[in-house]
Amino acid sequence: MIFEAVSTIAAAGLAGYSYLKSKGTGTSDSDKIQKIFANAEWQGKKGESIRLQRKQKFEGGYEYVYQLPLGFDRKKIEEKKYILEDGLNVRNQSFEINFSDLKDLKFNKTIVSQLKNLIKTKRKKKEIEVSFDGMLKIKIYDEPMPNIIEWRESLLIPNSWSVPIGITRKGDIVRHDFDNSKHLIVAGATGYGKSVILKLIVTTLIRQQPETVTLSLIDLKGGSAFHRFKDCKQRKHYSRDPETAEQVLKEVQNKMNHSFLKVVDKGYEDVKEAGIKERHFIIIDEAADLSDFPESMKIITDIARRGRSAGYYLIFCTQYPTAQVIPSQTKRNIIARLCYVVDTETASRVVLDEGGAEQLHDLPGRGIYKAGPKRYTLQSPFISNKQIASIIAPYIMENPKDGGDGQKSSETTKNRKHSLILEEV
Ligand SMILES: Nc1ncnc2c1ncn2[C@@H]1O[C@H](COP(=O)(O)OP(=O)(O)OP(=O)(O)O)[C@@H](O)[C@H]1O
Image (cartoon, rainbow, N blue to C red):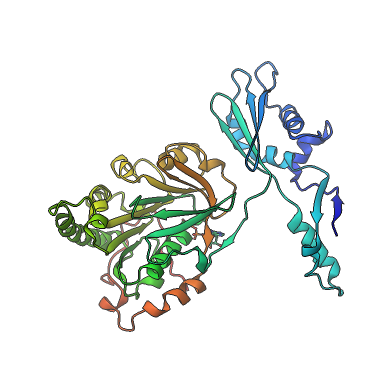
């Protein structure tokens, strides 16, 4: 049985609604776009409006391409994209409910709230992406991306160095394969999922390669991201402040030099070709805290440059994507980038070499992954601390080396200027 539930409740926010209502809602998305532009007074200097050049279907939605009036300030749209999105979601809503949706309903006194929940789930919100390349391009997607994707065991590929970092709108799993694109930059504004993805990566590596992975964890956010891994047998170094981080980096560089010579002197291109199974990951959460430590930054650049052959892979994470924090030499050697929501197009460009991350949906875990010509908008899986604890439990040592601290306990924090020091309880 299929029946149609019709609701006149606008799914949009009030902002978009008010930009539509003065002229009535249009019937098609292109009508709506024109009306929203007119009502928001997004026009040229003499009141000229945008002109639709073409509308084209792509898998998952439609793209509208407009010619902008001369002298049009595109910042107006970039800063207020929500008006467009809200306006496009003002509509009489129509959606299908079928048998499989109804079979779980319980016919008791909660039936009304169950139905309300069902309708809420079924009501789809259109998502849009806006870009400019001389023309204004508005992509309207048929289906919203899920707000949360729970981590699950089936995302893993045992014995590989490939880590799941997101799911695309089409449902494809995007993986970062460290044996192909060795290093990774992770960036994004505060609270958009950087630490969660780092924890997911570390957990995945321990799970998939428990005997061959070595971890040097530099957690300059005071330990909130990595402290749970400090007693794992795979953990080699653990540092929570820039001074000990520098020591750690020096030790890692020494070891890397040995490994590098072993591989290169024997004529191999990298550890994979040399048949060496071990890989060493240097993971830095909040690399901005090292930007005033030139020696550390030099070593990071060296790891980014030579580590690929030696099996020393760098994950460089920051919430301050500026040219000072991500030096161009480091960036040049790290092709793969994962960028969550950032504040400005400039920040997006520093990370991805293009805008776009400032336009992402305002959701934790929503990001853009770019590795050479590959580029995906994705939602990263969410792994809970409880899931992490149960996965790493078999690898926790009762008497960890260096008491599990991995650093001198009296290290000062005087040079840490970007981060709060927080201990997670
Ligand atoms: N992939 C995700 N899916 C859904 N929710 C997420 C995801 N990642 C993070 N979150 C939510 O966002 C919160 C903040 O995430 P996280 O601590 O990773 O942010 P962050 O970018 O590291 O922030 P900061 O730079 O301030 O430390 C998490 O506690 C969680 O509730």
